Length: 595
Image 1 (tube, one colour):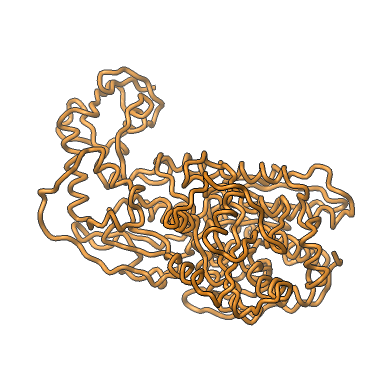
Image 2 (cartoon, rainbow, N blue to C red):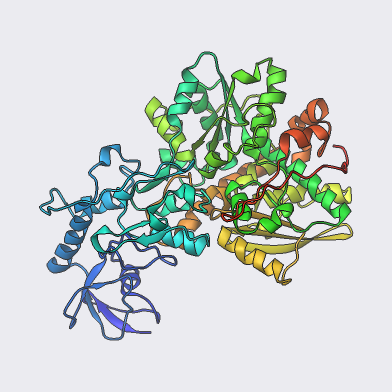
């Protein structure tokens, strides 16, 4: 273990430790912008400079290995002046739009400018200017705000294994973006938004849908209903000072009513219906012998990944729509009939932890009811902005309940937003449908994972092989293992974001650490609130939810029925950029057991 001195303090560190991490172990916070531990360390921003005794120049501490006998100084006047100058250089080519920027008061560059008391800039010269790329349905790029940190490049390349970002041009004109600085629409972007969550400035952000939702709420001719995804109840509180993972379901419902929504519904109801249909499809595959594995289809970024890179596996994707789209289809058919409202006047808003849902609702096949299933989507961040604009404080609101008939969910629907939650929810129903016996131990912790995990579960005579993968990089590794015959599964859940939907690209951005693993752990804590709510529910299995039972009895008939297939199932498309070929929706031939 190398022994070294940092600011005259002696310490020993593990072999391979960088000076940056050694300093942090000593309680010294060296600033960084490009660094993201375990994911990105290009030494591009140069704000982590330190002075090493005996070396003629200062070094970037994020890539400097700690060595025996080093004497390091982290806050001499010269070091502080050098860091300040590096920040000024970044600001000299940065637009001064802080008051109107998406990341105002939550920007890492802004925070460092304040920390180093930068009040004016004497650096003059040309500034780069690039056009804004707002053609994508989900992600907006503002290259003028890019500081070339390469974090977006790293998360897209190494975590998602997609790699749409590159360093473009050289020297002063260098920028991070798609090849030839083209639009995201011309790339295999998954619209997952993970690049947004790691961007230290406002160079990447979601398409803003708040104006469209405000307009709908003001229209007296529209009946505006809202659905909230499972993870919103355990993440929106962070924007109001609650500890991470605190469930604020009742206050959230009250806030939505005060915003002016005519009905406040729960997308966990849609998740319960998803469980019913996906489990029915799994049983059908078991009866006919495949094709296996059946992949979940709740995550639009994962579905797009499959369509782009593995279209030969499209028949393995579940035909069932995501909970967002299922809810929208039911809102404009089942709910419209029960409420006596013209479906043409129903405007469905979803609040999701995701920015890819903005892309999903625009897919042309998402209109089986004769109307677009969902009309607008708000990310968690957009929802928070609307509450701030309206002066609504969650902390001062009473708890209120969701509206009927699409507002009651089981615990299975609630855990959809957590790690392995879709798989666990489906297993609760699949076990009882396959064995005909009541499930005693309701929880399946063996499928809860931030990355990749597989297990085998005995269900009567069947030993069901299941796996979950977080991030399309893990999904790619899993798929390659399946293709090589190294793994075999019946059922696989894939979510594009770390820790599942709780770590979605539309969630509150956490900048208190630049350790990637710590950021993922922070997102995972949001799952705790969902599991807590699950344990409090009277019904913890989708097929025991009385509201779902009524839906099938009064409207759909049974899981896998002709009506269910027409409204709640879909088909997929090969999206290989060189030769897209439409694949027809599979014809439903075999009915499954009734509810």
